[in-house]
Amino acid sequence: MSARALVRINAVASFLAASVLAQDYRRLRITNRCPAAPIWIAHEAKADIGPGEQNVMIGPGQSHDFRTPDGLSATRYWPKMGCDATGGSCTLGGSGGPGEACVVRGPGGDDYSRCAPPVDTKFEASFGRQGGFCNQAHQDGCDFIDVSLVDGWTLPFKLEMRGPWCSRASTTIDCSGLTFDQCPVAEQFTAAGIVGDLRAINPKTNGVAGCYSPCSK
Image (tube, rainbow, N blue to C red; front, side):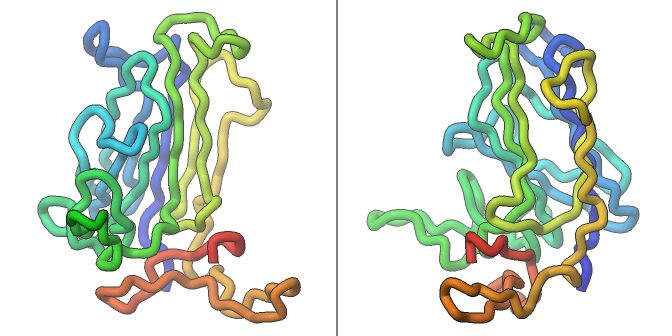
């Protein structure tokens, strides 16, 4: 089975971001490059739902510009597929989080047993002050971003950074060739003396829903 969509993420430098209102900056655009199916984007900021709609549906070939107000920090965005009309009951990416339907809230804490394994392809960022000079010593006008595969991955992606200043020579991270077929099924864990299957299985569908990183297995 192959991952079915390519998520294109455009992170725009703060001083060139398109803004609608003074406090409604939108420095993050996510594009669905899958030609045949929609994706949904869940997001959080400091363990709560970030600004704007949760579970945004993005149709084939379409884009969505996410709100990124000044000082928005510790954000995380991840894609989902095969969802119902509300962005729940997904076959891929339904790993829980604030406002997610698979999480059962109770007096004893949150129950994630109905959620998919948390191995999502993630975009993470902290956004600085719009129009401010980027001084890394004070982090006032800087945007800090990364694409995380530390837990594993679900969908392939391509990240494009736009703007005149960047701390890295490359402004593109291209992981558009990822497929579930590349997920190791017999990974050697030498220190533990075992062989592991890194495929993540959705407990509802019993289908492959992602690939663990070796450190998270």
